[in-house]
Amino acid sequence: MRYMATYDLMETIRNTNQWLGATAQAFGSYPATGLFPSPLFQMLAAWGEVTERSFARMVAKPDWNIDTIVGDDGRDHVVSVDVDKAGDFGDLIRFRVNGRPEKQRRILLIAPMSGHYATLLRSTVKSLLPDAEVWVTDWHNARDIPVSAGKFDVDDYTLYIADYMQELGPDIHAIAICQPAPLALAAAAYLAEREPDRQPASLTLIGGPIDPDAAATDVTDFGRRVTMGQLEELVIQRVGFKYAGAGRMVYPGLLQLTSFVSMNAERHTQAFRDQVLAVAKGEASDNDRHNKFYDEYLAVMDMTAEFYLSTVERIFKDRDVARNVFTVNGEPVDIGKITDIAVKVVEGENDDISAPGQCLAALPLLTGLPDSKKAAHLEPGAGHYGIFAGRSWRNNIRPLVLDFIDGNTRAVRKRGPRAVNEDAGGPTPV
Image (tube, rainbow, N blue to C red; front, top):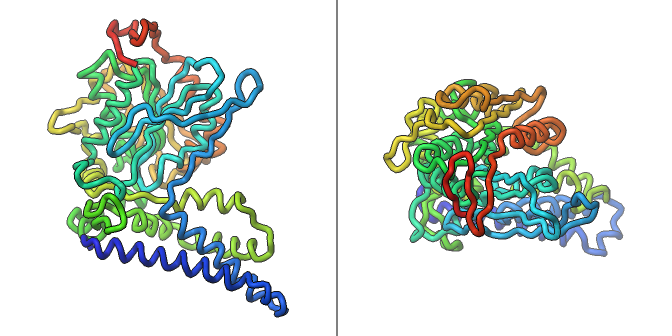
């Protein structure tokens, strides 16, 4: 499958279905169809509308759509999204709330690179902005990155995270959600040993596969069943001629989406049937529950082949982080070197992606960290999405995380354009 023609064929199929949907909507919406006493044309137009929107969203990066936040003064404050640090494979972006005093809490949200854009954390960002300054890792779609930019694997991902932590200084509190949890832990250990005066104050790990073998799921079972050679042959393709990354080896977003949908095919099929009926009856809206969910869910991005394959091999198969034998560009990273970064683990009782126990495996690895700086929370009845963006996050987990952050905030005094970590005694650029 490692041919540009295969990638272009998938894009052609997607584009054709988008065109068919738009055509069906236009045909079923002709005024003359009102002369026929049959719901056929309404159903055709409805099917076309849902189909066209679905296939169009697959290649569109969603907007953050965070325009204003209510401040402590009760007024709406405009939110701007600024790029604090640009990179070939990702940017460090800041959500700047204009017209309010800067908050003491400073949070770095480490977004997953697992098929969806960082906008998957939109509701998480919105929930934190009223009480904190928020930065997010905004990963780029691999299809848009020229081959000349080079490789991007788990080593590069880890160094990106470490670089962002250094950029934000010793008073930053990192929150890693899902896929980046093991690599965020490795990045923290990397800094703890090499740049202790620039390590984050705390690290919260939410639903991540620190040790995939701690509790089996469909995801971990798949990783065990399939060999690396099979994966490389079945899912890796070269970006086609349409995009700037033409020729780059990737795990295509469209192929990832096929896997996502197949895991709950019956539920997704029923959701689309219901939406077609709702549109035909005039009961749907542009921002109804279905569209808000699927506009995000269907928007997928390509991952570089080396990142996907090295993640499967080193995190899931060889369990480098779980066995504390992880390396970055050949240099050992000892998680036991973390002695001053408070670590909290959050899991969902009904998480079927990263089951309870997988993320909790981080705490025994922290042999150099006192128990007073370790914490864990298992949210009853919560699934994977709920522990970082759903009701469980808003009502229960978010307050606990903010309390954990407040209890582990370092004293940092300002000196012009530099900040000093009073606990470590060293300067850190900010």
